[in-house]
Length: 151
Image (cartoon, rainbow, N blue to C red; front, side, top):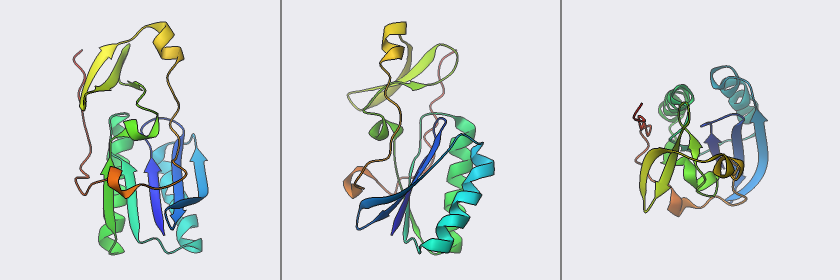
């Protein structure tokens, strides 16, 4: 049993995976700090997760910080492992909102910020949980990925 959290933008996505297959999804537009403990309370009443996975950035700095601290605390208190990858794995490598008119872009493995056109903004893919959890995409390098855009 594994849990995946994608909290880079609203809505927050949490998936429960059994044998790498998605079996339950939680979605919320509430603040990460308010809803994440409630979702995990529900999860722990039904399941016994062994590992935690999350999108470590880029995206909302506050949501990333809260998610990382919350999940890191769980790994320590419940003797679990924490794995991470960047958020582009969950939105088909679409631009991710940074600040103002800037967006995070990943090209050739390098993440940077740039302005994009209105037409490109319309084509941005929403974040979604994968149907199957692919361990190969994740690493134990799980510190938050803070990329500060040039303003």
